Figure 1 (cartoon, helix red, strand yellow):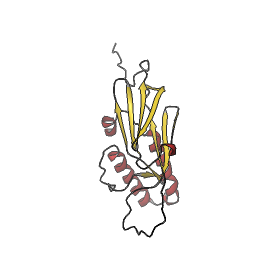
Figure 2: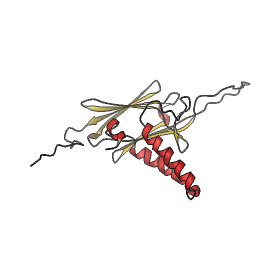
Figure 3: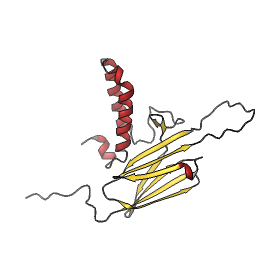
Figure 4: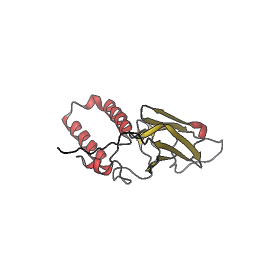
Length: 179
């Protein structure tokens, strides 16, 4: 059993990780022949996989948003109760009309854009920490998620999506009787 499966029994970001791996692979294809570059990639991937899911990865500055292929990854909280899953996404400074949520084949995709509103003035910026641009999160729903019971609410820059549970779904783990 892998160590990450102990901490994260369901991989909510499976599809997102697959697309990130594709982006990395395409960007580095010309350098794959170099054994040192290959070793470096493997070590990076090992550390990325180990620290994924921990709130404070030692390999990323806290003031820079995580990205995949140029897309900003907004912060996400996922909670579970007996009746539903609650997915909370931070999207400050984004209008509700600029957010698109789709659900297909057990995959919830949240995308949008935080637009930079520039006013004509004589201001000079000394530091810019806020991020602007397209964002996306791809969330793989568990097998007991009821795709017919999905609701989204947006308030004060926080998107809250609730996904009901299907009581008739097969549990992801079942007990096997010994004969």
